[in-house]
Image (cartoon, rainbow, N blue to C red; front, top):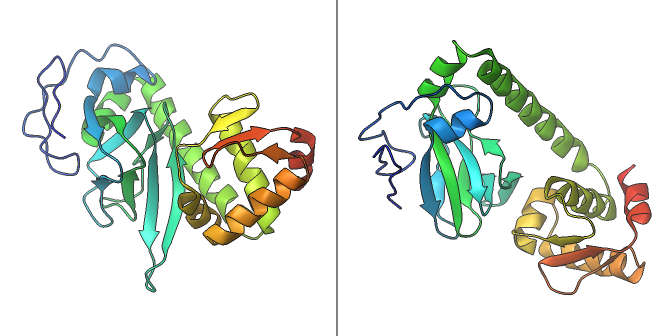
Length: 229
């Protein structure tokens, strides 16, 4: 969806070249660099943000909603690599092309930043350079933790996922998940039937309650953390 900010910077599509780019005053540092350089773009449910193999020209920060990155395997299965929630940044991959695809999970708003502008700012602003280093390190850590998660049991995978979402969403005990159970299954390397069965097992064990398919209440964090250990 075409949107414009106050500086009339416009996008035909976030994966396509900018028709107009006017660098604003970028005296602010850190994550505010995304606000200074970013173009707000809205996406509808399941709308593609970028595709596997497309030029990696932009970096994205979630403002509202959520996004997922994924690859379609040779046998047609989908493997979700990561979910991104408000405030989180993605698209900082290695190389000139994306090695995965990205979609909006539901109606979402992103700040889209031209990578070359962000790198140019980092060359003169050490706080922005440190931010990019930190984001890249966090992404590497996320990939490593996801790989280790996939060798655990189904209950361990689901427990770890729920605790991670609670932490990232800054929720106390009630989590309103933006993603579907099929998304969770494709992220955890399980079937949707296994996800539903495992949630039922955790609910029977009084570790969680499931008032709706998207709302999870953590009723016994200690029990979940024992599975997380």
